[in-house]
Length: 303
Length: 225
Image (cartoon, rainbow over all chains, first blue to last red; front, side, top):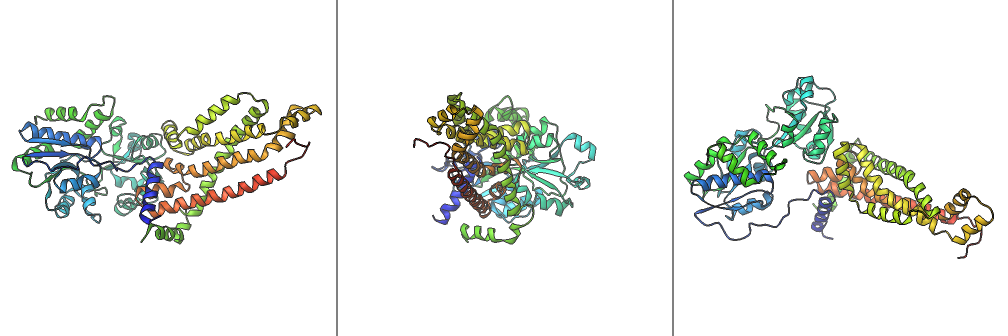
């Protein structure tokens, strides 16, 4: 068995066995380039990104820009090449993760540093526009009772809690924003780490609510944060890299008109909006992304 | 560097052989989960299997039920239980016990069924009570198949106990799940290698036990075979 096959076999076994299937979907973007007067909007393969892509698309359409949609493409490995070769022109990205995808050695964590580094790291024919305030990133959350009892508001406040128990995905143990960063940036030592492999999903939430962990890493736009009134700890020293929603666009399509429309969208999009949109999409209502996008744009007076 | 040589490097790195995250500690945890699971499952399944085998009652039901239990996906079951119980040892043990029961039950009742009817009739004819027939004739004669059930349950559990890491426990699954989270394929491969090695060792031990059970079969009365 060749080494590549062995790597693949190990990866596939793990992916199947753990049902953590990697994004290996077929590439719906293969095909001809977008026409010169049309903007082809793409999205990554998860609901929140699709909703934002719908917002971009409908905002552009409302102002008379010709739009085509190729949503739900996959992961960065699939859609960044599609952007580079012009099969799609515009896609909502997350600043920090986009930077580390383009430059794995990047260390910037603050909003400004990331935007600066992005300009250098992007391929020549792509550019990013104004970032929105909205962010979808790892966030450390505690229950309101724990926050009250221990007077905890920021991540740094956790240093005064003895025997702190933290639950997060396994990679939190080794990543720079994880256990090593807690000690280096905030001086928090001797954390009892509980790896929970569901990316801040129901098992992580239950562990937090049951008190099996004191702090849980949950993505900042997860509906359960609102539903359970969790307290998201502030991160004044930027331990966790900023992940602002940012339009990534082919520079040939970034006319002044298009830029203005997208800037107007970004200016109004907040993390609370994303939380609300995700809640409506994943909650009992299961409202479709295109409907949610229209509602949001209407409520902000953008269409 | 190839994944193969990186895996060898990972396995021979002395820092991976000490501490809470070291191979010896993870190995002990893994064997611990396996032993607890097989012990609990045996207490449930072996007496039940013996009763079914001895009386012949509910046999069809037992076959259908164990078949259905075998088909349950452990990871799915585990995830489902976790949503009720939260993370920890309980959900992992429940999911693994469910996995271990079918082979144990099958080993016990099919073991008893394999005993020659004439032997049992002879035992009954010489005045043995049902209890004596079970303990002095059926179980000794069926022991090899009963141990075979324990063997197959142990192997399935040792291979599947890696999912315990999915609900925050330790064991050798930690290497596979933690490795996957950071695309550390040598660590994943090393974890798999240790699980495979452990499974082979345990299988060897049980093969020996089974042979022992076969050799110590009593020849209470001459069998027709």
